Length: 263
Image (cartoon, rainbow, N blue to C red; front, side, top):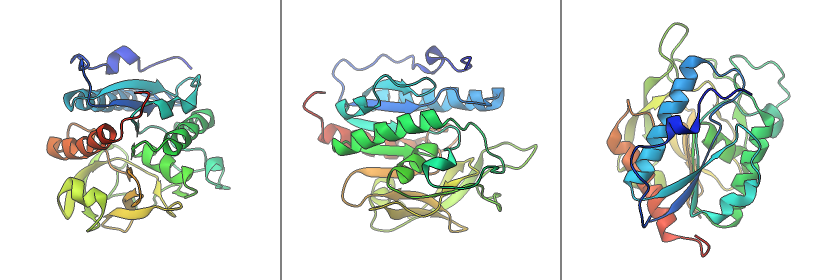
């Protein structure tokens, strides 16, 4: 695969902190099959905003790019936390789907999926905080044995239609009493969304934490450990900066509080 998005294009201008509060593994496929110019620019912007935000919050990071096979996916266990970003669709074989022709499917790379799932398993076994965004949230759910809606038929709340911008402002409701609600400090949010798939059945040990107006899962968590998935894109800098800082700040604080002995 010829790289379209390069590491130097997503690297923040701000230097890494000399004494970081946490060292985070950021897992993303910068490149995936069928990547076009429009989506490549989103990958650049969203990844760069993520890394800039982590550094602003006092954390350092290592970028684990699953565009190519990871030498050691289990290396995620050696970091203070794992952040999983968005990207292409997950191969249906990872969650037991028999569909072979999924409408609007794009970016499927089963090898990248398997690497990511091995990385999630290692980080969870090591007790590290994990935050998943969009595809990253879906991978977390699949790791726990959950399933995915292959294509949302009534999609207007979740993404733009043909000839329109992909991303839309979406109203979601946070479930009271959840970790996500405590972090975000509100009963409802307006978030940036651009997805055609979503979590269907929640995986083992996961509970609903945010829901769309049509009932689709927009967030979930494990109430017994720091594992959170959000379907929306807090790293879209066309959305609210304060909400991004709250969510990423809660994750970085969890990483700082549970720093591993090898960090």
